Image (cartoon, rainbow, N blue to C red; front, side):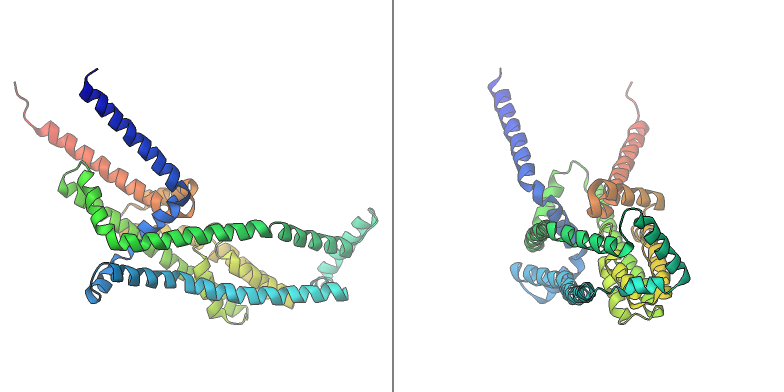
Length: 358
């Protein structure tokens, strides 16, 4: 074997081995790193403004990172504190009910003719098993409490993992703001495309990043506004604050707005305001909880000038494949793939148009 070929194979094997090790190291933190990259690209206008007023590389990166961290953290800290207070109050109410042996929601149910009929039928059915409805509900509530206690340790563990990933993302934000431009130029240098093609790709990449961020923010604003209107009509206290909380939590995958409106609806039922509870529950379930799937693709498609059908496929396919970050990765992958395919078609037309030497 030629010695140069041998060295080339050794170098290539070392390169592949290094890539595998890099993937193993970064695998637990790949999504926080991706979020850092996306946020840095979306926050470039803010960073450029700060760099005009603050000299150097380190201090502007620190200031921008600090501002973004506060923007992300402060609303969640305030809301978590509020929810903690509400949770303690709710626990005290339930504790008082259990100690006194009274259950206002059940009494409220029995005060209506239909509820009274349901209650009597349930008692008649359970009497065949030697029990009644009240002990069954009490036993069920105790089991729910035991389930919550059993899984509280896992919840604490998940919170700890989330904090680690969030800290890593913040560190990534700082270094990407500081050295991201140089790293981006290095990446561009190794892309085997002409400069004009690279510029087209870069432009579409940035357009999609901005479009997705606008899509998420505008969708959250719409959901928060609609939820706030529902809270106000239902007579809930602090509808603006609750609407803002709904807007913030709407970005959470799967559960999203339900984190806020389900406890509010439950509060209305416990309070005895059944009509408003049912109306608000239907409003949030059918309108607030589903409208994001209809309007987010329109927002993203409009800002990125990408075909709506392609955007819808990207958003839902990305969600299925990558989770919440797939809302951004899905459309990005499709847009880049479509652009590269256009380059290929353009190259084929150019090749066919060249004269053939005889």
